Length: 335
Image (tube, rainbow, N blue to C red; front, side, top):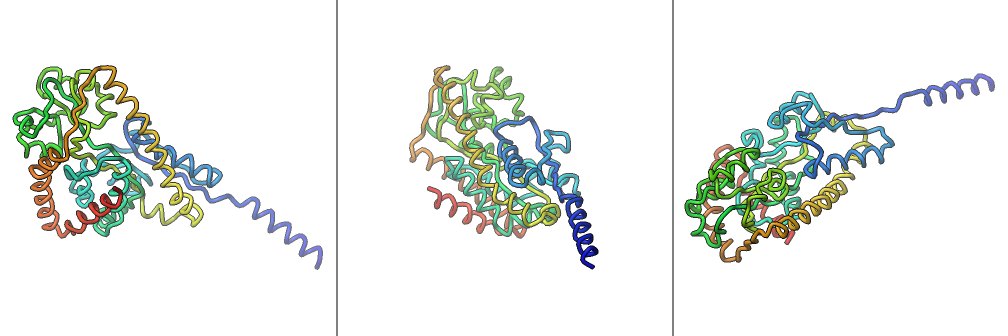
């Protein structure tokens, strides 16, 4: 009997040793190339690999799995487990998230962008947006507020925007319309040629895009704090894939989000430093608006667009005012 028990114990131990470890490898659909915009996803992969001894990893694909506007569709059919999306790419797919792309919200820093995004992501309306696609919101890809690089005389007052041709899209374009400017929706890759040929007088981009698309090379001025708006681009994941994770892997994922975002913010500081150095090198004038000027912009542009948005969302059965209140409450708390 003793020999039998010993043999059984050895056999059980052998089976335990031979049993394969349950590993998770998620496919992740992003676009472009590795850059600051994707640095938090790359960092998340590092953290997951380290915390799980390689049992939970991300296979990040730059354009090989889906086109950017179709990433939610890919999540919904299980083509991949994680993806980056931008609310403005498909406003009908995620209407609640478009609250974060309203103009002149008052966000000034990336830290504030993270705060308002995470607050909105936690609302029932935002969760309902994602439920339709079998998706869950994980974390934002905080983008700086857009500002203008332009040629010629810098706009110093609200009146100076009358007739100005601005490369601006979406809600930002709507905002400039309200102050008398003429928005033009040329693509990002066409912005340099549009400015060079005089099709537009100025271009609204975040700092990294002004450098990537070389509009800064022709600029004579930069608006430091106009901050008319930005795009909101969350990282989302499949609900089914998340539910299938072990408790240990869920904990590894959830506990890594803040560190991944901290890494992103640190990387973006380098972009700011590089951009400011380029402004100095090229002798570009910095235009900073007073609080009175900004209040005038908000009254002329933000208020009517916000009211239109509330009316439109409410008609769709979305708790629009609650979303506004959540966003502004998070912003005020972050100041």
